[in-house]
Image 1 (tube, rainbow, N blue to C red):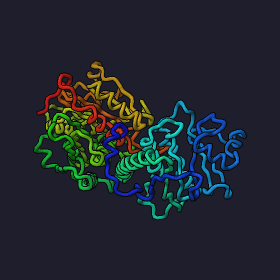
Image 2: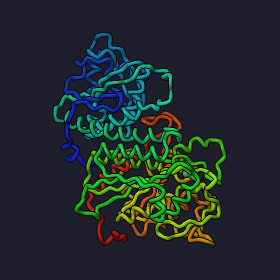
Image 3: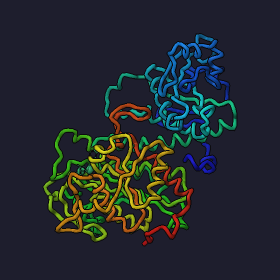
Image 4: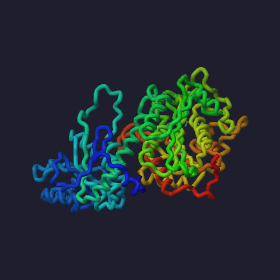
Length: 537
Ligand code: BES
Ligand code: MN
Ligand code: ZN
């Protein structure tokens, strides 16, 4: 990942070009004005009057045309701004695209991801299928060349993404954007960029795995299909996998999960993926737990019909955990990672659980089911218990858990809650590297009253107050002293508009951050014994 340069640099170099369905990205060491390409992409910071570096060289070759356009106010250098210039034979590239990078003091890898996405989508709209680009930010921007290559690849792949599986006629653009060449004259820097491009392609490919799963309608993406998707990842990346069915889960005492699963005829699955990156140090571990509700009707506490179709995405947590394992299997951090995905539908079938039912989770704790629509915390309770039973002492769960989260933070950032300041901070910091934003919500003891029950150890709904926090407080009852972080991605798992590298529909959040976190934790080494409250069982 971004901090593990030595490992990434050692990565095998199979081919020169990296391909993710449709788009190929390669790196070339050549002068930019000499390359034969339908479009050469250069960049400009906001407020720059006289471009330098690669943009300056192109400007000079074009007789000061870019400077003129800046003077005329046509090019401002705002982030995402795109200006197409025809070169009329003055230089080898037939067009130059000037991409704005925004203000230099706000520049980082996230800007490169966004600009890269905007650029390739712009070119696709124009029917241009290939381009050459400078490594944005690697020059005047001061960005590490490898990171620039990674961000360009992530932005381009994620920005071009379309979920077109069920469109029998293709959309407005019949042209696809197929080939991007990153140009860098210096051979050593070109090598670094290439390593970054490869890593970025791996990461984007996995994010797209998650997006595809989430965008897939629920009649296709059933719990069994989720298990098949996980199986495919396990086979391709050499991970261990175990898929458990209803009977096995009942036997393990997963009463909370099975209470939700009893409302549907669709078999539930507990999907367990294992990556052993540090087998001689079992205490160096991380558990990734995902909510895999392949459709959430609400159950007997049925949801209103308006917008219910969005509930096909209620397995986004599980999908992102599977996809993160796809990256981890390739980047190979020195840490043991266990992924646990609790997959079922939440349907109001004839045998569905009723409001007022009491269920018992794997750790023996009882829960009064006040609202069958608060099903995510029920399935996660047992998944967390399972991970603890496997000896996991650091847990991160990912779930589209509460509508309240969308109300609180909207779609700009993911809500974080947890019981361990270090792990919370490590998660937020990993997000700063990937450009996925996180914001912590409090877990004050005062909120615990919200889920007190008269008939069981707790109830599964805390009512209208602090809905995201009361849900997290229920999960906290099942982590048994382990360091734990909960990510509520109800808002961030989908996007309602095209923006930067996001397109309408599934976002792939927080796949890249989970993989980054695994890598960061591996680099930091096993958690300090004195600080960890949890014992491996
Ligand atoms: N899957 C939903 C949460 C959700 C809502 C995700 C909107 C994405 C968009 C979850 O299972 C749910 O229904 N939560 C209830 C909990 C309530 C009954 C305590 C909610 O948020 O309304
Ligand atoms: Mn629900
Ligand atoms: Zn749900």
